[in-house]
Image 1 (cartoon, helix red, strand yellow):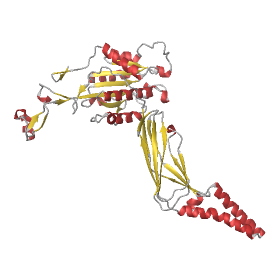
Image 2 (tube, rainbow, N blue to C red; image 1 turned 180 degrees about the horizontal axis):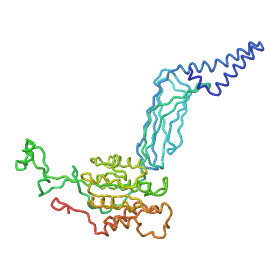
Image 3 (cartoon, rainbow, N blue to C red; image 1 turned 180 degrees about the vertical axis):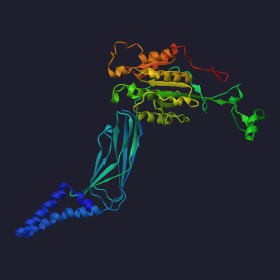
Image 4 (tube, rainbow, N blue to C red; image 1 turned 90 degrees about the vertical axis):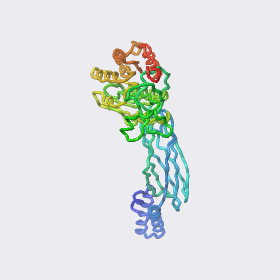
Length: 432
């Protein structure tokens, strides 16, 4: 009741004040008819507040977002399933869903009356030009009486997440070398010879040739173990993104960091489509959702990578974290998306180059984002970062704000062919 009285609207307070004034004047003037009118004006908001406060409603809400992960600039639809599981009808309802401002204005719905076992489905569309992970909800419900004297506010506690991934550009195929590394269950390659360390074994199964028994492993395990006829190979690629604040220029959606994130996302999708298992590493180390994982389709593989890129932010670091180079099986293809290349980074970049079977880099000409250089002055020349990388064994290309990502990627392939790179092939089960 106290909550209902505090939720009285301006109209309800005006009725209450007018009723009290009429009652006082009626007593002073001895007008019984005016006293009855004053009593009615006072009782109407009080009785409404009493019944509205004592009413028990069982409102249900199920919110779903389809799709739950969209690229920046694309739309997602939010569906609301509303139910009234109580036995009492409701009055006027105003429903308002809470949204971050980047997703648009807050949607509002008006329900004139919600009877027992009432159900309704409503929906609205959200869209964001900014990447990120956003929370939709909770929904607030404003319950009002037919006279508009009292208005109660309730709120659901449930929220739903929407992941807005960076913009992705389709990339043309280019030669990729140094891909086959590690071990896994895809792309088996038969091997004809090898050392004892290269032999892989499994448990003996009925029907296996006894000539395939590996006696040393059998003696160690205590049961028969046989040699496998194939050795699995796996195409792995590491995507490195330099997200340090000091190496990028600009702010907001037009910054060099946003362009770097978009380039990284485009390369990640392209490599997965080419059959690579990809992990994401940033200047602060390996990202969650970017570690090696089993293949489960393009959508299953790119989902964690794009979600990790959606929430990447600038970090205040002066040096690159290269501890991930110590991981087993990190070698293979390395694709780095870099900002400004400083002298203090050259040692770490050299270690990254020597640890990978093949290293490719997209170096952003960040001065273009700061507008400190004329785009017409050296449009066909490499930036300072790409020039140093090429001189130290990298296959590098320069990214500029006025050049499409696909063009930069194609230039990277041309740079690789100019260095005499070739795609490895299998000869007798071995890579050459």
